[in-house]
Amino acid sequence: MPVEYLPFIFFFIALFYSSVGFGGGSSYLAILSLFLTDFYEIRSTALILNICVVSIGTIVYFKNGILKPKKLWPFFLFSIPLAYLGATVKLSQPVFFLILGGALILAGFSMILKFVNTRVESQKFSKSKKIILGGGIGFLSGISGIGGGIFLSPVLNLLKWKNPRIIASLASVFILVNSVSGLIGLSVAGTFFVNDDFILRLIIAVVLGGSLGSYFSNRRFNLKILGIFTAILVFYVGLRLIMRYGFGLYI
Image 1 (spheres, rainbow, N blue to C red):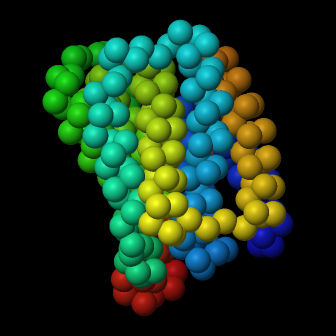
Image 2: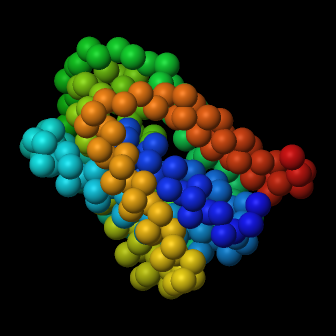
Image 3: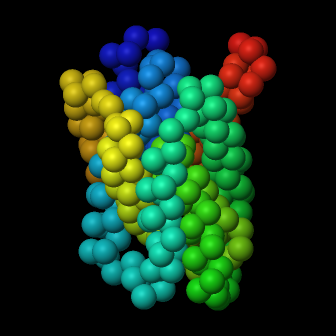
């Protein structure tokens, strides 16, 4: 597939992910890993696109009064510094792609769990549980270039913390702050790199898709089928990276 088609693909990725409170980082990484070889560019590009998409969703959630900062801040206490720390870690290309592959497999599995879990009961979380969960996922997001919401949201749904819309709003802000923190970490570590012309086209695509997806999220459109196909793609690319960089096999 020619690289010129990527803006169209990323438009639909942003459309789906923003409709459920995500930025699309896992799929951006999955697709970019098929076209680019420079893992610094892959990670930097994915974080920037994440920020563009979830910024839109965060504004919408704040505007609609869904976000409750007093209940959410513990998730960010450790996630922000640990996302920065994770992003500053310099990895060899094989190690990065192995970590990315594992993260994508986990992300794909987490997405599927999110869609099969429809419970809406809620339970209270202690501040310490929020802090530990946010910190662990924040560190993983910094290393891999994924904002972390795609891990956090399914876990919170499975543990029955609040309703899906509150969880989606938390995931959106979580991805935003961790992506910004991770991007700062890449800059400080000297591993930030993007192709200006290429990323500009992708930014335009994801902003358009993210805006439309945020509109759909507030109209309760059902994009479950698209989400399941996306989860399968993310899972497959993660497996492909593990097999290639871990075992030297091409699938």
